[in-house]
Amino acid sequence: MGGTGSVVLLVAALIVLIFIVVLVKAVQIIPQGSVAIVERLGRFKTTKQPGLCFLVPFVDRIRQRVDMRQQVVTFPPQPVITQDNLTVHVDTVVYYTVIDPKAALYGVANFIGGVENVTTTTLRNVVGGMSLEESLTSRDQINSVLRGGLDEATGQWGIRINRVDIKAIEPPATIRESMERQMKADREKRATILTAEGQRESAIRTAEGQKQAQILSAEGAKQAAILAAEAERQSQILRAQGDRAAQYLRSQGEAKAIEKVFAAIKAGKPTPELLSYQYLQMLPRMANGQASKVWIVPSDFGKALEGFTRMLGAPGEDGVFRYQPSPDDPAPAAVRPGDNDEDVEGWMDTTTDPEIARVVAAAEAEARGAMPPPEIPGFSARPQPGGPGPEPADGNGYQAPS
Image 1 (tube, rainbow, N blue to C red):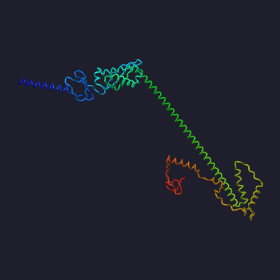
Image 2 (tube, rainbow, N blue to C red; image 1 turned 90 degrees about the vertical axis):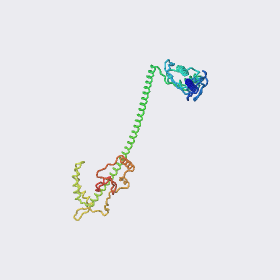
Image 3 (cartoon, helix red, strand yellow; image 1 turned 120 degrees about the horizontal axis):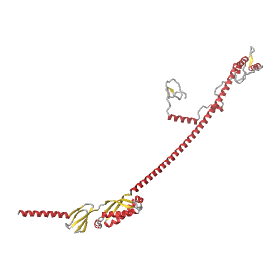
Image 4 (cartoon, rainbow, N blue to C red; image 1 turned 45 degrees about the vertical axis):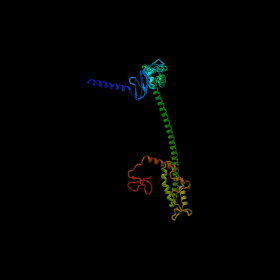
């Protein structure tokens, strides 16, 4: 009885195990971005999409899961001989996508190896027809030719080539050294050219600046010379006008002096004896003159003097001739200083020319704006009641002349 129960338990456990195995074989989960190739009894059955899928146990099986996302594969550097017989090593990167899983799995044994071989062959065909310099500067052209050749060759495998990039093109070491020397020489050449261009521009700018400075200096010297000449002309005109007025005033003063002296002589009623005495007093001064040292007194000088006295005067009771004014002589008029003719009135004008006054006022205003007026100890700038001008600080009434 106990042996029978053990057999039953063993059979039940075996049935459960078989059920679990069958369930595992029958139910599969396909992840997103992948598809599964299902074979039934060794032949292609169907392509399962991502998600839960059911298979016939022990009849259907998943041959391979194929990734449908874009793949990136990097191939090792491939030696390629250029048109000028130089061996370069080219690194390529291929971006591809599986669009037909059945064709990719059954059309070629190893589609990754196939893509690599097609890439190497196409690359050698393209780069072999170019020189080293062209291959180094024509990467976009090489990429487009590679993509077209690979896409055409892998289309039957259910693979689409999205992009092909040339990572690096390594020339031989000797060529790299010569290229580096050439690039160094080119950079030095460009640096020399740029330095020369900079020096030329600097020289041109300096010459232009010196030219402008000389032009401005010449203009300033010209304006200064014109202003100096104008100032000298105005100064000479003003000095000439002042000399003319001074000479006129001196001659007017001499005339007034002579007139007053003559009037005083007439008013003093001199006698012949007084005139003779004054003449004798003047003789020594006349003898001291630098012009002549010899004086001849005429013998009839006394008679001439006597006639002059008789003409001016009349004998008095004592027989001495004295000055007698004529009744027809007008009374001597009072001499007024400053009596001038109408045509010389302008000579005595001491007012400043308006143009000169404007220039002087502008200069003074500029000087006051540039530098404050100096402070004199003991004086203040308060105006006096009688007119403009600074007032002394001690208040003694003294006013500085303006």
